[in-house]
Image (cartoon, rainbow, N blue to C red; front, side):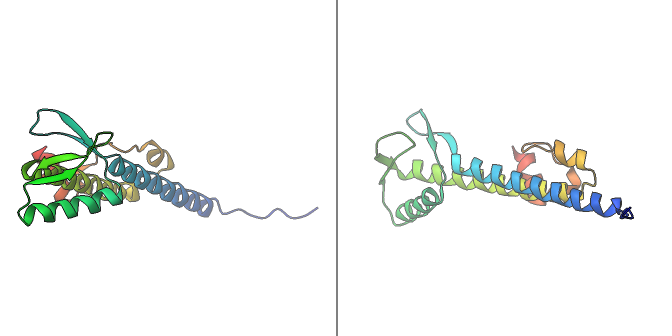
Length: 152
């Protein structure tokens, strides 16, 4: 009969905990990126709500549009998701750019604080319960996230 190998259950638990933690962090990162890419809704000067995606290309487009506004353009061609291209006022473009920046900054800031919170957990069960959007304990919130949550 072969002698049984002793299994160090502490090391197995640590390896499993680390794996679950890294998997959860990756899942939260994917969710954050998907939310950013899916974009946001904004009411513009026409009184209508429009949706704008934030793919990398969309973000680059907004930078370009912002520079057009800075150079004095007053009618800027662009389009909301599923809509035809039309002229937007420089005020509407700056509203879209501001909202896009705020939206992306919030998601990235929230994710970074969520990651710090997940890394503090030492139970597979606690880590498994984490979902994107969960309230993060204050001690894991960055100063920026605290400010954004206060002003929300």
